[in-house]
Image (cartoon, rainbow, N blue to C red; front, top):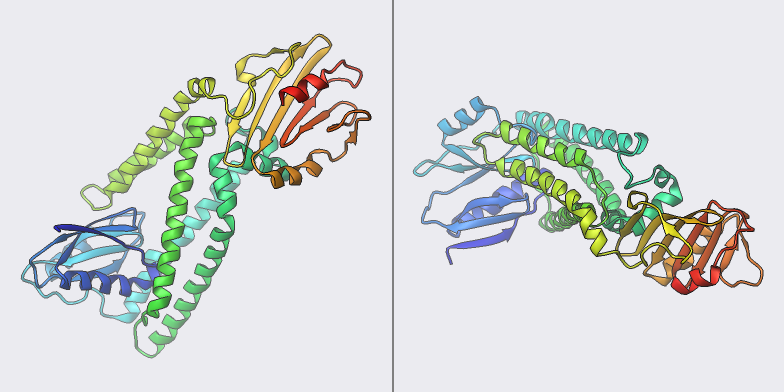
Length: 405
């Protein structure tokens, strides 16, 4: 066997264990070839007996300083790969280079400058983007502004988006994992500071703790990868996404490629550009795809008397937990606005029923129908049909609607 693949999941604060893992593979005759997505490492057979690795911290947003890399090269270290917040250096053939960092205090300062500062900036940028996305007007008809109210956003996320449904399911894991990692990082920094006061470096993590956290990191990375793939699928199936997001990804990937000219992390720039181009392509294909695949809900209109309005005023989405559709019909007595939701799980339908009927009263003589005088709700099993914008005396074909639902 000339090549092998291994899971390569190490915390940034546990780089000593990652470095020792690479050196152990080298002693077994395996040379690191490439690391994919910061999670999977590909090794190839080598006859070298002097192969050694050193893991140095770096700022992932920028390529390492050329002068620093040159000094490392003169000392016998060659930069071969970049993973998360680390640069991986390999010893040159016939050399026995000393470790790049030997002063514990300088090593601690480099960690603060290269890792902690970039972590803080990254968290701040995520919070700013999230705040802008929530506060700014929606960029298109795909997501109505009302979804940002608590109940509307929750129901939309569960029935209107594959990515949001997955995010709701993963949210406890992400929150607990993030809090636990923050506490671990704070404790490790405290231990490190105490060791420095005694003239020592950062002690390694207990092996079982390192393996446990490596597995947690791998699960988190895998779930985030699934989230972004589902977001791409949302653009294709549900029309959720925008040209701006796709163009933004392409621009960001191009900047990444420009920064990393000739450096190991160029792969990530290409990946981001590909994702942006795929999102734009999926946006083009959404309309023809949805006309062929209408989803689990019946196609509009739901009444024989209705004449469906132009297609741009109709929306359909599907997720793992349900479906959602909205359109308008023109009846002889006025205009009918239809909001239809289907839940795949019975307990979700039971949870949604009291939320949907809030402020409404059951209609006498009709089972499964509620009204507040201007709005109606027709419930059939796990299907909820909200009818809005017409007076109570309008001749509404409830029986026909229930049969179709």
